[in-house]
Image 1 (cartoon, rainbow, N blue to C red):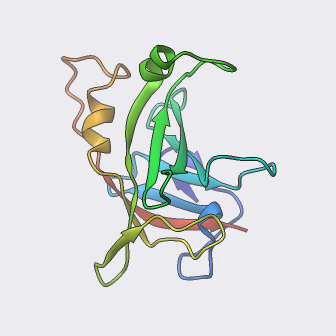
Image 2 (image 1 turned 60 degrees about the vertical axis):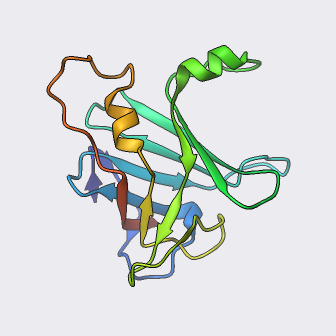
Length: 160
């Protein structure tokens, strides 16, 4: 299956049991794909990791989800070309495209927080204001005619 220029290999159809760590999503225009992947290592601070592939195969955004200190909200950060190793707050700010809570939307329209890695994958994800943040990020020329991408991603498949 190909979504947003990304070939999703080893995918099964939506509707089958799928853990959040293996879920793949697409926006309505199929111009963006969002692919979760399992976190490796025992001492991780993030609860979910994902990639967003744009229509430009050279632009892959990295995303992490960290539950806030009270465990009340999954705070997600989408970054592009962040430096490796110890980074300053300014360096991190400069490579951050979007930061906000990710919400799961069920088939009946009810809204909840993003499931954990090993929980059943959400049918739809809402990344509030992601599209505008991406469109007006440094990835696009200010005067370009690119439309604002969607904030909504629908389950497109699941890695085996």
